[in-house]
Image (cartoon, rainbow, N blue to C red; front, top):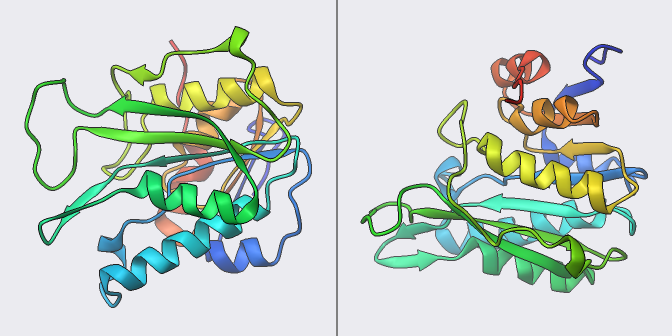
Length: 218
């Protein structure tokens, strides 16, 4: 459901089926956060890791050489072990021949605090086949806060801003695709910066919210 006003399209669909039906998304960069193992109760941890790597590889395969793919992921602590999603994403990127341009840490809680089920930070990793990092345009490696979130699994506004501004300043792509868009924070921030946006969301309720969410920038 696109409009000239919002420059936003949200598909209520399964992300994998939608991605598999696409070729390379010319003119686009991808910013997304992929689902956690808690959303797949029928899968073992090992099965979910395999799913996660395969899905990340599919996402990366749809990014054009002059675009970037940015993943925002929060690790989990499960059964007494630490599951590093940044590592899983990098495995997929190596399979697809995408280079890591930067890896930022986004604080979810003040430094020095103790957290339990999830760590106090998230990973934000940027990959590309054709783009290379311009050191003269470097930005902070540690973000002190993720910013406002619209739901517990959402990407914070400050993190979205960093990701979208990187696309704007370092690539010729002018459309952001989020295949797991949730409430649509990435899409709303992209629109605020003048970028077009395409989202995919399986939940009809969340897809409706993603079509209309506004995140005015201060």
